[in-house]
Amino acid sequence: MNLRKARSVYLFGSGVSFILSVSLWFLGHKEEGIFVGVWVPSILSLGNLMLSTAKE
Image (tube, rainbow, N blue to C red; front, side, top):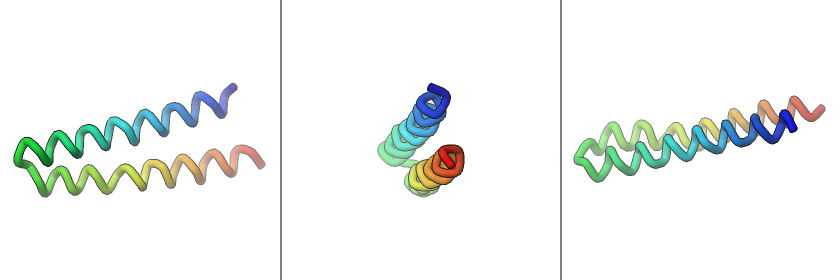
């Protein structure tokens, strides 16, 4: 159950980052949108690393 909550937090964080990135891009802040968009794979990678070590 605890790992399920942790996975949800990482997925929610990456989803918010993606939405923020797309919003910034279409509002004309392209550089900021790209910067925030780079966070998505970083958050997912961190979540994968943290959850894989927690399972062991």
